[in-house]
Length: 327
Image 1 (spheres, rainbow, N blue to C red):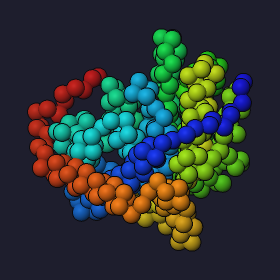
Image 2 (image 1 turned 90 degrees about the vertical axis):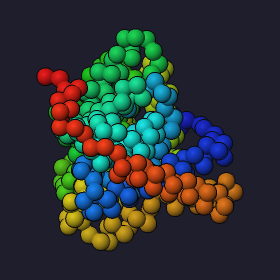
Image 3 (image 1 turned 60 degrees about the vertical axis):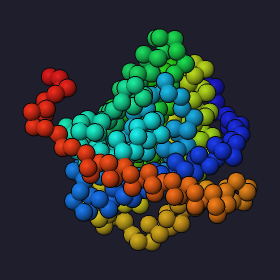
Image 4 (image 1 turned 180 degrees about the vertical axis):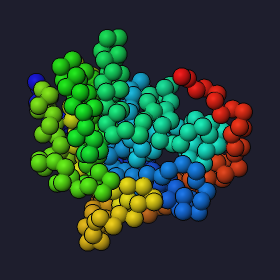
């Protein structure tokens, strides 16, 4: 198998600022959801990815419209980056007819085929075989489209993980497996469920390469993903990219996360991907006070408008409950 190479890339200032915008928007979206669910205004379960934004931005930024993603419940930002309007995504969380599933399901299981988003299920790792199947379709159709499949380190201990990665390795499928290693599978720390330090090492058992990176460095994530996408598009098969990160909130907004210490949380908050990237942009004179205020103002307006739209949208009618359902 060709080894993973450090892909060289050069992003224009406008692209770097676009990345900054996405980081801020995704953070703001999740932060507002955290407030709204505590106010009883959100009907869906809320599983924020606060602290993990660099993974979504770094992996999605190099995708094409034709590429597919198989996201997790914590990856609402990937929906936004693939083209779902914030007001539509917010409507989904409010259970309104203007949401993706028109109020018939929570945000966890929605998808948009025309945007390359395959809906998730609640079972850990269950999206991975689906991703392998999508990648097989791309290979059979002789396209150079790629699938990105997200999973947590806990899902790497499931049978679906083994079957999907084994099949992808045997068939040399154009799929990139992104492990969001946020240190806990609900309340279980990774050292209690794995005898290895890096999930990426498991890729070698399936005949392809894996790499572990700093998941809080958006450019490191982008670089690793670019290399994996190039391999996949070139017919060299799958790659596993493990992004080491940390979720600031509990497994969900109802989880108080008593299983971890304040010191641990503070340590990881000091590695916040957004200030880190902000410093990078400022030291290179890409970002100044005026531009930052402009972007932050745009983000606030977008989120405010999305919430207003969702709150004022219509509730689903009872007679439409079984529309678009299939046995």
